[in-house]
Image 1 (cartoon, helix red, strand yellow):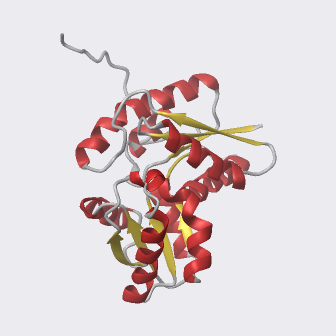
Image 2 (cartoon, rainbow, N blue to C red):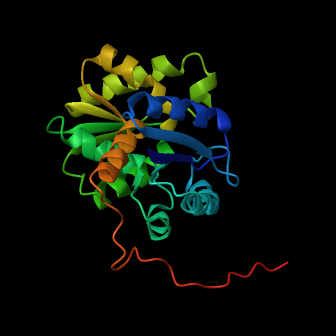
Length: 238
């Protein structure tokens, strides 16, 4: 049995349930996907500050997973927070959903557009595209200006995200769309049908990437930068 932990770095359990269901729907036989909600952090991640505050809870979850013998991890936030630190801690593969989604979309056409929640998060998405070598494939970044938590509660959210995706491919001339938020995971099939191009959800893309790496017997290299961090005592002052 391959065990994958899908870690939601925010503290909203309802979102964890949604993305866990999406990941389980694509996981192969003999793969157990468990959604894990961070014990510490913001209810949603919509700023650099939110992202920074989400990392301690994420890393605590990785440590628990290592103690439990988990085979691999998905970081279910499009900012891919704490990815490098998580790879230092984990023996198995750790994949961020932005990383997986962009790489997957690059296989599906000459270019893709990213559609995310708030405009203030676009800069982070641009940085990640550059880091992952995806800038030459990414033709544009677009925000629908829907707060993350409203994706599940606003009855107009699906329509607004769908229209933002349609406008993105028309404006950018893209062949595919990357959904720029884990909270959009359950919208993927509907949007694909509506706009007629491949739409990539990073939650499922990352889950299958981890599954493939584990199946191939591949683990995070511990030769250099991703070796276990030096043992230290971290002091919390009263």
